Amino acid sequence: MSNRTRNSEYYEKRFGDIAIEKGFISHDELIKALTIQGREEIDSGTYLLIREIFLDQNTMHVNQIEEVVKAVFN
Image (cartoon, rainbow, N blue to C red; front, side, top):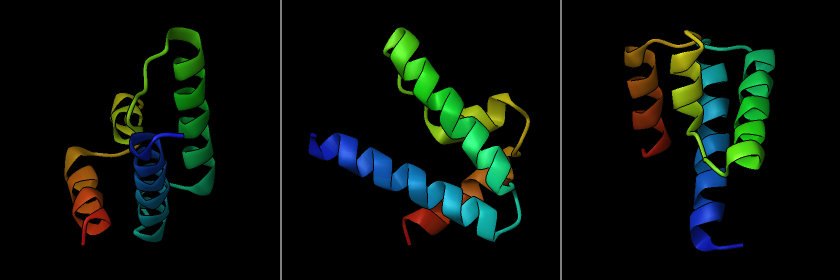
């Protein structure tokens, strides 16, 4: 496993955890998004960021995503 893959997995986990902690998403919504992410990667080889999925699914707003991204990197 490359460092990039490990870093991406860490980031995705942290993003989901923080979004749940802030009350922006539920645990079930995170599981759904991770399932979509995994299927997309298997089916097309495309790795979607979890935030892209939440935005596409109208699960989170841009300002919520920005807040979580800031928290991930603090």
